[in-house]
Length: 312
Image 1: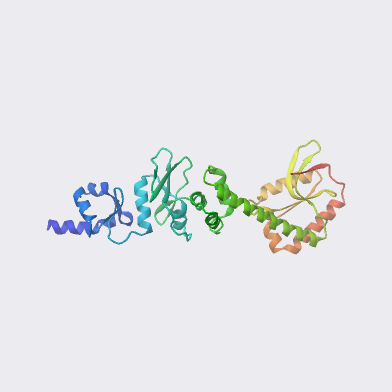
Image 2: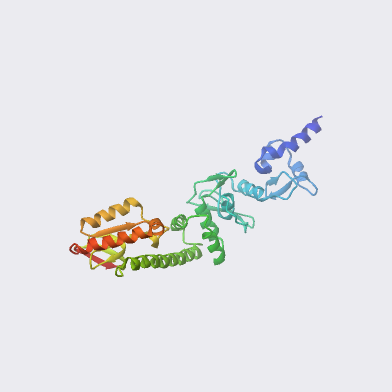
């Protein structure tokens, strides 16, 4: 009777642990001896060792979730999954590659071997729970994955897959240490150049259709005594017209509040200032062209303001 009850308890044991993964010390705490655990993990046994002191309470090949659970068991409390596995937990179709990457607080123990990398960091991400696992936010996961990817092609694929906003990746890179991010920074710089070039073509065509002369690009405006007024995308110096069109920087568009403040500051100095959001350039092109023409006429009808233009 005792034997049958013990067998029944062992059959139900996997349900006590997430994904059927337990530490051997936990099993000992439930009353199993080290010898019995070793026997059940031996050839033909119903359990298997996944790593030192971590047991999978099943005889099927362990899946991705079991591997992740085993990695968390190794890392200990407070660990957060990042890198490729975190992206997969967020629903991004990323195949596994290399060691499972976890981060732990700086005062915890690290680990690095072929299966699990436990990295100590002073910048612990706020864990998001995905499929029952503590998971780094997507931008942090992308950066950490790219830091451990040598191929520029793969880094580009991870960063530009569209699963994470480039603005979020840029913010995360800005906070990260330079080590390991050189390739990612280079990829982002290439994207910047391409976007700026494309944005310049868009606004240049818009200005041509409006029948306006070519402006100066990226101009810093100051008062005559060098008080800073703002940096504008396009500047018609002959009439004192300033235009901001955020197609040059879709990853960091100027928020409405700051744009309104800058327009008011320039207007107070006699500048005709116009701010156009990228969506309007795309969806309401004819109206934007009319606004540019009207703004240029208004600027031409008043004295040129006493501001100084600096080409940065």
